[in-house]
Length: 331
Image 1 (spheres, rainbow, N blue to C red):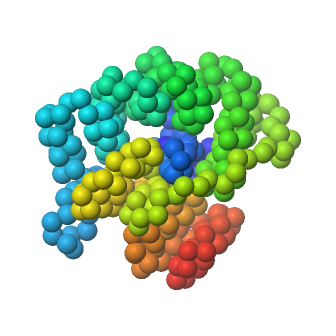
Image 2 (cartoon, rainbow, N blue to C red):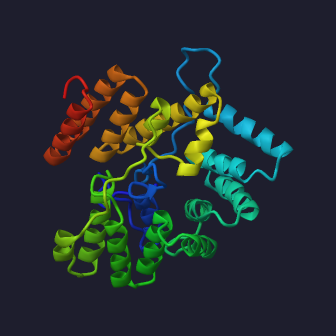
């Protein structure tokens, strides 16, 4: 997946070295991945939630860890399956096992070196797995460069390339790059305002005027091609896979598919419990709950979100409007 205005800012180390970590977290709420418009969201300094198994109702549904084990077993028999390695990398990423995600994605890029999304996903996993502070890891930067070479429109790679510019002191170039990303972002995307906020925050910090350009900024046409299947459509609103990985998830047996997606939804809810001052995050959760056919849980999440946003009138209004459009009780 990251807010420039989180409920509580990460504590800046004396040497400013926490900046890369914060930028990596900022990315999670911003980047649209693939035609389905899948957004990633990760809150700043969010403690990793435990892997949450699907509800205990139907008995035979596997947990996300079970799905990972099945993928590992399948890849042990068929190690040249690039899509399998991408799916395993995504699964590790969802459980915040970033080093293992990077290892899996390296194998995917070795087998299928022409897939831009695999390279940019690898780059992000390397950033989050890195012990380096305050600068972009060299291997991550190389992965983003490769992604851009294959697909100049890759949003995740473009975001992180701008991060690298900012970290190296090229703040104006970074802002220009983020403006370029903003222009390719649909106006109705839930992360569009977050990109604007990143631009505004960096501009304010480095005394660079951005408000006039923000007022004139153009957006791309609304995103199309949304997934229409219930569980998969639910995944389109939360931290998740690329469009190719969504297709691969659709090919999984129904029980495995739902286990992975429910785990993602529960993971998003855990992040909001830890960092609740995030209107867009609550909206993502409401959409996911409704797509999973859980209106009662959606109504409960709405009330939790409104309570969390009681000191943010604009955020609360935005949440109510979204809930009303989704037909959620209590909006």
